[in-house]
Image (cartoon, rainbow over all chains, first blue to last red; front, side, top):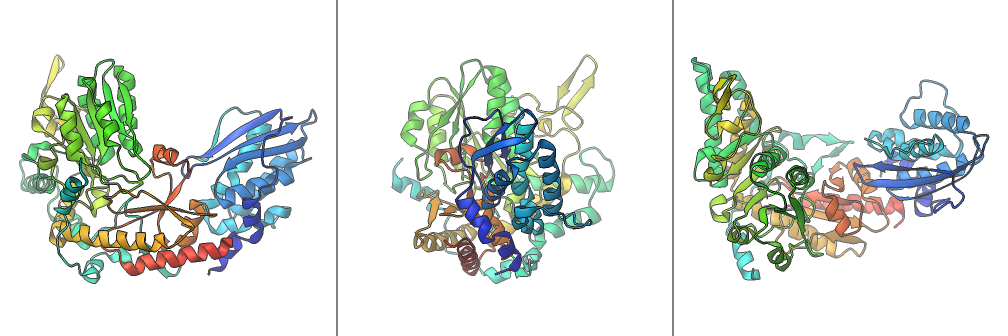
Length: 150
Length: 423
């Protein structure tokens, strides 16, 4: 079996995809967004509670998709809690650079998201990993538009 | 329709020809490509087939020695190009067994052919309240054009349902056909399931109420000998690139008595008789529907693809692919974690499945790393996915050059997927 496949489908990824964290409805949510990948049919709805200081107090999601998109969504929800909007956006930029292979700068610290860095060897799967983030940022920024990868 | 009658319909295409797969494979240089260090196993033929040398050489020969614009030059090369182009039309006529060459319109592909019928025939004929029947297993390209024209004409699109095997519910279809029915749009072979539909019987029922049938033959063309005279369908569209031909070329067959009364689809050069600012008159069929400089080279390549299929033997191709399908079903049936979609009694070319615990998209990625190309997703048939309450399937689809060993390679790669996912 090829190493890059093993790097992509690490146990942590499989675990998050099977048992996604923060999965379900968030009753106290004050913003939400939907994301779809029309090419493969992945879809998720993300709900957040953002306080007056623009800090994400809670976040949950529902949806279905491939292991990469579910694991990315699951890990993301764990990391977003208690980040400010600006911090969330900055973290996504670092994550996106990592998974798109833009590593000309020093590798940034992306914490737990490191397990998803194998995606960079699979350009067709980058959208799976980034869709939850685009959706989360749309929710936080109050966008009503459905987020789509296409 | 009786089971026996349907089997008879299909069996007439199944010959006894034995296929020399190695000799066939030698005609497809791309099959020698390495993918991620592995020998390519190309099982995405339903999306687009690979091209034999006969086709690429015909394209190259055309450009090297025959090309100019068609139908308007007085010089030698224009004559050669026109002859090559019109000869391709005659080949296409024979390929679908049409009565007349002018019943063949060259289009970009099936999608354009279906849109042409919707726009030209539909716009002209449909009245508010008229009904267009469209089967549940259609590709989006045989749904959306009808929705668009229905919106503009006040007509209504109704769905012909299928059962869980992926077969048209013929009784339901009989119930739906009425005096209001104007158009029945149905696929010959379903791209997401492989079902071969009873086109002749559906057409005959449609004709009883004066409706026309529009057949999407994109997936049928590479696997089934087409015979519009026998089917008696009114329109039939197909794409060259799914049947070993070039991209960007396909044909629309239409009965002469219908086509000759239909208004133009696009305006431009080639399709006119006379143009003045007071008004224009239009050319006869087929040129009325071929505005602008046509895709001459790819039409020539399309002709070469038809000839490739004849030389190989369409019955031989069908028989070979059927044995691949039987084999893949047999192996899949032994796997508890594989669920098949499309278990119709008559199938061609397509094996769609899901694997418990692994999303189709992940299967696609893992197989690709082993050199195995399949399609994953909704296959432009979202109503089919909805029928089965799933978002996506994995689909292996066959061509004449596929082998039983390649199917084994696909199943080996599925074992890798199971190992990675621990299922």
